[in-house]
Image (cartoon, rainbow, N blue to C red):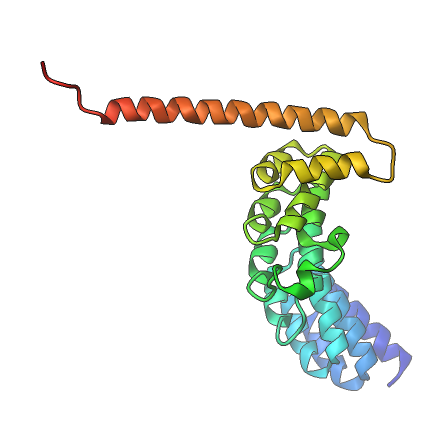
Length: 228
């Protein structure tokens, strides 16, 4: 393989030039094809990805999957998923707020499984989504995540000030456990975070009151009046 062919292949993959990718992929070694696949997946060129797949290694396909997920290129993700471990790709999709990719990858990742639930909470998909204020992803992930991930997701949302994410996570969390962790943290307590928690509590109380009033009014409408 010539260095020139490899560079031409990289450029073709980055530009989505399927004709050149198809011509050059058989003239390059696996390492070059892996690099080209990575570049094509990063830019969402699904046709180029399809051409490069047969000549790429398992590692190249895995890296390509993560690249595509990080940019939200759903078609490339669907093409690359194969037998790949989707857990890392899910982390990057959640971090980028790519809701369709998150929804798709959850078909391949059980976030409640011991392998994922016992891993570092700092790297859970929910924590990444909450830290970056991606409410739509949080809304999906909170339904399938274990309680410890939800609690940590709320801490991340409190830390970064994402009020919409906080409101989604709060009803599903163990609020007492979250507050205890805030108090017992190694760092000096952040007054702003505690203020946000108090705002959340007030919001939750208003929501419960509003819901109670609505239910009461609905009950009155549905209850037939007594005849005298």
